[in-house]
Image (tube, rainbow, N blue to C red; front, side, top):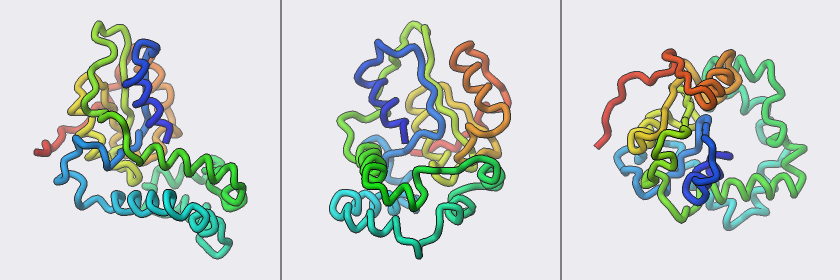
Amino acid sequence: MGSYAAWSCLHYIPNRLAGVAMIAPIINYKWPSLPESLVKDDYRRKLVKFSLWLAIYTPKLLHWWVSRKWLPSNSVIEKNPAFFNGRDIDILKRIPGFPMLTKDKLRDQVVFDTLRGDWLVAFGNWEFDPMKLSSPFPHNKSSVHIWQGYEDKVVPSKIQRYVSEKLPWIQYHEVPDGGHLVVHYSGIFEAILKALLLGEENLSYKPRPAISVS
């Protein structure tokens, strides 16, 4: 969820940035420029709205709920095809996963409050609309990149494409068979660094032709 900080830096302190690379950045469904036709049927929108309500009005209940032993374990969630595609699940077999989301960690009030705070900021009301931002690098002295998995089930590529199309100064890269964990795929991290630091674009990650949304 760190992308909300990156968007904020692009808005508030662009003069202090040398470049930005965001990997599967979150989509805030409250952004004014997101058309209703694009998000009305997105099931993730309802999940985010409900979770946000719990985080705001019943944080103690939410803390109790996510730390119950009888709920599905973190390992079960990580293997759930509703959240991850096949490549993601293969990756999760080889990496530690999400240590901050284990029940033991979530029982720690400090950890829970930290994650809750991130959630409230990321999906709450922002003071600006990212899709109204101007290029912070008008003289092409640097660059802004978004990397996205086409099969991402956490952050939909369809909406990510729309955001990028509204901000043509952003370089959009898409992993054709990628899910949410593309940064862990072989060669992707190197491709991200080369694009950001050297301006080298890997043609394998140019997005497929997009379908326009009115």
